[in-house]
Length: 253
Image 1 (cartoon, one colour):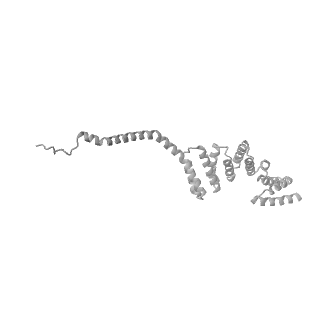
Image 2 (tube, one colour; image 1 turned 120 degrees about the vertical axis):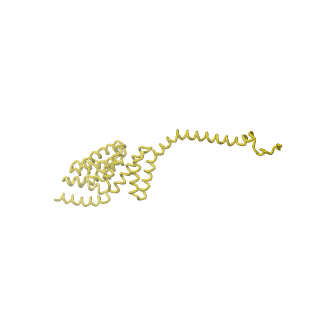
Image 3 (cartoon, one colour; image 1 turned 180 degrees about the vertical axis):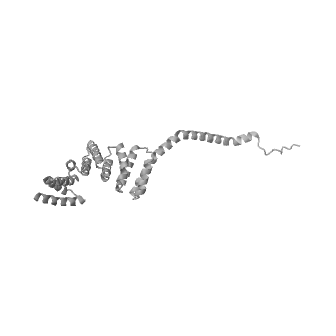
């Protein structure tokens, strides 16, 4: 006799469907969201990754700058070099990185190592007067005087175009140093005099006085050294005082 007990605890088909319907819906929504996520990532993910990789150069450069500020110079140099091997999102940031690395190498008395970075910087950004200054210093320290003549003239032209008399004066000083290195005292004196005319409080007066003295123009040398003594500092001031005594002695002999 069938008492109805057999299968009494088994769920009926309609009961099963109603019980699991919410789970089926949730799974379906999750699957749709997954597909949408895959599509969005495939569309935007590559762009995001590209942008992130483009910012790595900037981030590495900032890390290098922080290392330099706390005195970890060698680590900073390595970090700057690593940054320059990466892609930059902003090309100007790369230029500043080149300049910072060049400056740091100069401070470490590694002028020859600094030159390629500074040359790349001013090739891309000739209007960067700080980089022009550093580049000229590197050429002077490596005694590349013929190249320094060209670099100083280009720097002066850039400064003149920007109406920056201070940098014009500094460029004339570098030009004078280049001509001294090439053993052209008349050209050196002319460059120093132009620099002094642009900025009377600069170092050009001292170097012009030195050149005038060597050329035997004692009156001009005395005038220039007196002008420098009013504003001089450091080793040049001590040397200028000694130079003045030499000029006076030469005038009296």
